[in-house]
Length: 243
Ligand SMILES: Nc1ncnc2c1ncn2[C@@H]1O[C@H](COP(=O)(O)OP(=O)(O)OP(=O)(O)O)[C@@H](O)[C@H]1O
Ligand SMILES: [Mg+2]
Image (tube, helix red, strand yellow):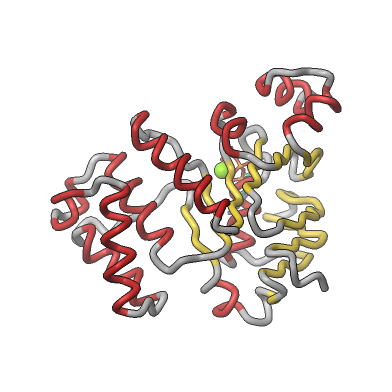
């Protein structure tokens, strides 16, 4: 086992009622990587992320986070992960602050850390006085910003995000991009699924292309350009996902 790897995925397979959504995925991620997973609708991106978080159980294969097998030590493994699902949920009758408190208590964040980090995050994502309003009154983008705060509150080392930019205004999208790059500099590992190719081009240290439950390519943008014979990320993507 290579302990310097933050995430190791070995021969991961997932079957839903006879349909193989993932067909044997292998991947290793190191500290300081932003891995961006691209692929058509239904390719298996969300399934992969849910398997890593432990929300789904693999039909076959193994997942290690910092050398910890998530099947053997799920609670310990989950404490290292931050996750934003494709359709984030905040209890409508909680205020942003109550929701963040709830998340902090689930992750057992120490009081001093909570006070310092929540203050920094609320400022960074410009939450302002919305923090004490019921979340049912939040706009889509405000919910996304609260979700970004809950993501980082417990200082996770492996950050999994399913479609981070949907519905964010340009200023918030930039804050999110800058936050990801600064997390990379802090040697966190990010695993991001997206359809926003410009975002992938700007933040990814390595890209993966998945299609029909198979990881077809992984590499830097330069490496994928070489494989596909194309330069522009959209053309690279279209070439590598064509049937
Ligand atoms: N709970 C489930 N039951 C049955 N089939 C499922 C289930 N979850 C996912 N699938 C199927 O597995 C395949 C992969 O789905 P997944 O959600 O991982 O795709 P995706 O790459 O995230 O797509 P998108 O870009 O649309 O978000 C799809 O064919 C989907 O219908
Ligand atoms: Mg998805």
